[in-house]
Amino acid sequence: MGFAEIVSRRFSTRGFDGRPVEAESLGKILEAGRLAPTAKNLQPQHVFVLQSAEALAKVNTLTRSIYGASTVLLICFDRDECWTNPAKPGFPAGYVDCSIVMTHMMLQAEELGVASCWVGSFLPDELSKEFELPDNLVPVALMPLGYAASGVGPSERHFSRKPLCETVKYL
Ligand SMILES: Cc1cc2nc3c(=O)[nH]c(=O)nc-3n(C[C@H](O)[C@H](O)[C@H](O)COP(=O)(O)O)c2cc1C
Image (tube, rainbow, N blue to C red; front, side, top):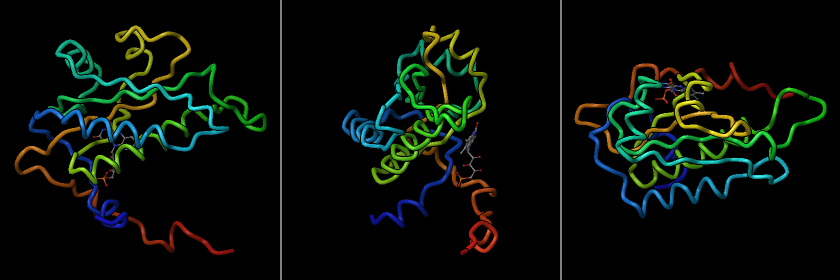
């Protein structure tokens, strides 16, 4: 599958059949995240793989957006390790870094036939408390991974993309 096909096939999967992601596929997905660019190459990301019954039960109390997945990635950055542009104090690059890491992983997953969803609907403080994260780790997003349950496809919203002329300007 070429890159353009990977990008166009991906959609937010909101219903998984619960089958686990094979260790080999998961390894490739995590490796794609490892190779992502980060500001000053500081690699402040910390990726937690939630697979135990206990971790999954916990994460399901924090968001309604796990959708039955049995593998969930929790992506955080270390605020002490990430870069902050002096011109933008208060905006640590860790959020951008983690977003790139996640995008790499999401697209690698798609290439392997593993479905995913980007999940931002949780309270970071609540999540940090439940998973007893150290103060320096900032949770950015969750990513359920797995295989779409039967009948689950893209949402209507998936097909609504603005034309390039609305988002791109040649100067
Ligand atoms: C930053 C961010 C946060 C998101 N949070 C959620 C979420 O909490 N729950 C959910 O079901 N989808 C979430 N999504 C998925 C978007 O709703 C989805 O990407 C968008 O509607 C386009 O649909 P598509 O991914 O199927 O193309 C999030 C996406 C992004 C980029």
